[in-house]
Image (tube, rainbow, N blue to C red):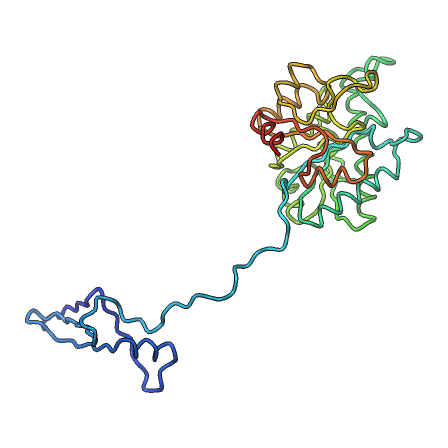
Length: 327
């Protein structure tokens, strides 16, 4: 039995045409150009298809379904775009104390909760690191009554857990789903810190509060903030303090001190500015994490900082500082 090879012109396409009335798009195409196709076997057994039209032979494939451009405008999300999509907010223990009449001021925690709620509902992912200086500061107590530095720091870590649980309760009272993760296990009161779990919480719109610092003595909660920021791929560290930002001199002693809008990491280290400890600022520099220092006590500042609006002092690389000055 002879083997028959079939070959089609690469430029032709044949579709079966129904005997029913053609569609409007097909009728329009056929009225524009009548086409016919014929086929024959060559001497070597190949099937050859020729396609022609009233306008002469064509090299275009027959396609009765011309692509239609949709008249609908491209879909655009109504969610506004902010400078930061995932942020880490560092709240010092002293800031939680408010007017210092008690260790934790409920008005301060409620103000923080409401401002964080206003931005999480816009889709911004927020993680928080809390300090513990309003209850116990390890570096201040080390050496007292034979208390060594490591033990003092561990007590300070427990103080941050107290603040975290209080802040969590305040946030959940106004409907913000919140999780507390501690650097060492306290499974009865909080989750252990697991990076992938923390990221998943953020992706689901929950606020994650990191407590107990890094879990190691001799490291501050500022360093913990820089470390957690790098781990969860947050875009900025927002350091909430009791001052408006970084000044060129101590504003408590010099009323003419000027607020600095931008600083580079090198300027912070070379001028020995007390923004963050050197370990924290170096970690931010190595991972190119900008730091925004702003006043927590001014209403609206937290929301402005999280949205990326200009507030306080921006610390970053030379390029970041240049762009901030240009804006």
